[in-house]
Length: 313
Image (cartoon, rainbow, N blue to C red; front, side, top):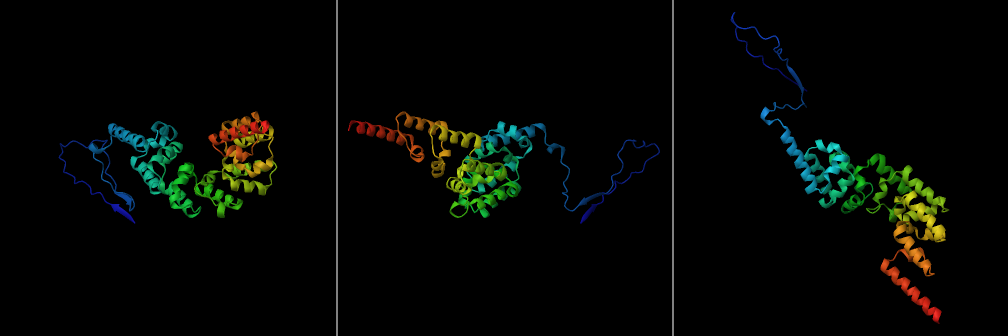
């Protein structure tokens, strides 16, 4: 429907012969305006109500204060990584906060979430966030009470597209065996942000290149899903080299204890292995790595004492 508003012409006053002629630069008479029914009809803003520089500055400072004190976000970092935040109204930011809060995410977690993904500060919850939550709830089948755990563990989920990223990865993982007792949970939703062809497949191929069969690799990642989050260059390769060259290990032990890759090479694997070698002892990977530092040291002392006793008998 089209609404036609006819602007009534101003009454013309009779001019006397001595009346001055109209100025040549006077605007011509306005034509009738045509507005669509959906077009807002707003009265002209009074000059006194137009925003001025000081008003804009106050609103901007209010937004920064809210970001820093309420959400605990580094405003300088946010503006650097997402310049669009400068022109985003405070109401838009609060709608994002309301969306996250509705899913059980505490305000105390917002600082880390927004610092890691500043683009969320200017997103549209109905276009960008609610579809992700709907996918996690109804397709991945994560309980509502666990949604917050998924997001806090991996905030990147919030910036991934459902159709082009999350759904294809979920289908791949389910075909791999992540179903039933191995189904994706709030602890393993982090896998959904990985590219199938760019990340997951190369890691599976690398493990197979070590001499494991496809079935053995699948069983390894189902037992220890974190394997699919580790870097080949920074994790797999240096740890495999140390295990084979320095520890003279057997790949069969890696198959039994794939959690080996989740321990720090410099912080735990090397120091403990070298202590064992220094005293002429050996332990399986699980015995060497699963215990705390205190338990490991106590076990080492016990082994040394037993060695002394055996030598004296």
